[in-house]
Image (tube, rainbow, N blue to C red; front, side, top):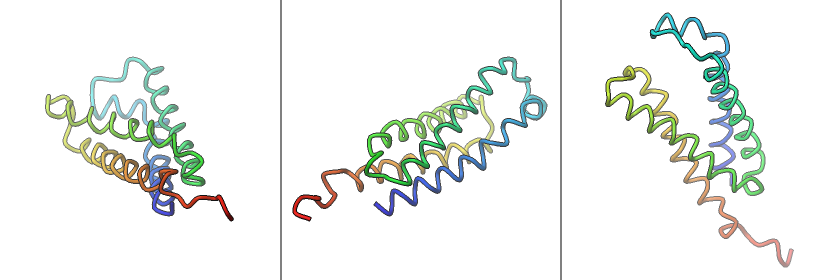
Length: 130
């Protein structure tokens, strides 16, 4: 269980550090990586939903056994971004530096899968007889 706690704390902290600044980078992203963003609602919605997941990671980190079912959508959250970036990069629609963030998400996704299996309720000592 300690493994899952560490993995989800690292994921949450990383996510807060990387995602929160996006709230203040709307115009800069459009200048540095044109064309400008034309749908701010989608952009800020993405940032908000992503930050909500960081909060979910904190919940999981605090009690991996209790929030074990949340690990499954957490895996999807990580793999959906990582795989999408790989596909878009292979199509020439994203830049090489974007692969860093995709790689981190894919590694975290693998660690989430590992955490899921390591904290499976069937692998935990039974509370019966205590």
